[in-house]
Length: 319
Image 1: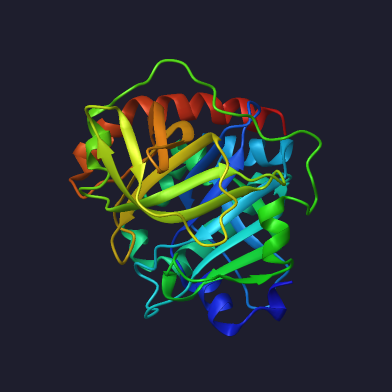
Image 2 (image 1 turned 60 degrees about the horizontal axis):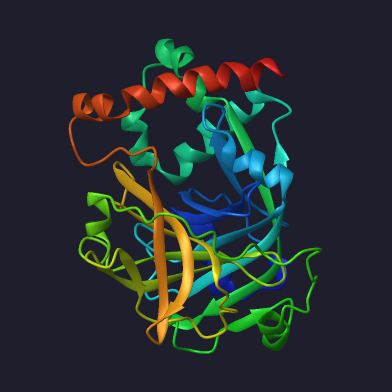
């Protein structure tokens, strides 16, 4: 399908440093993390990858192959005023050869992110970082593509692969069961949520659409600390809004991807006060390399690295 897409859309696939990748877990939660996309013009799929130490992005896609890729942050792409593009697609996981995937990852990431080579450990130490370099790939075959010109969510999106009326009604590939509704329960607040609307005036909202595919878009946000709410400032034209489980993901990085930060807030998406709101239940920090010293980064991630190493041993042992 990608070969028939407009050139500016294919440029987005090829040149964006990050895409917001959404899977659906076993409980029906949409989970969105920024990852690096790999794409060759006219290819049948857009590829993303994750380390053996944190394989959930791939394992969830194997269990439920309906995934989404949102291209909404052009930082480092060199593109001026690109469209925001949402790909809803079918995933295929490749973990057959960790060594081959390791070599591919080093080659492609070095080509796409040359500045990040400075962060890599020396060759003789890489065996201690197999939790990162042993890779699982996910190939995402587009089924439906939304294109908002200039990233304007107030504009009618161009749609490739179906008609907007079908998306809104959920009549395309109707799922066996409707997406889970709001789960309710205790609200949660984390001090880092105050970054939403401040450091991050926009973030990625993800939910499961009526047809069972994740739907994501970058939207303006604000926080109501007293009410424990994340307010959605505007709804994208074409979004099949639905109350239920949702995720708000915030991330940023520099032009060369020498540092990056990311976290997500999971909760219930509800209609409230004439608009849409996320009721937060949990904040989860990602694997981050903030703009700080190497020592500070190591201290920040030490506990995660220990956990990743244990997970990687289990995952690789199965092969």
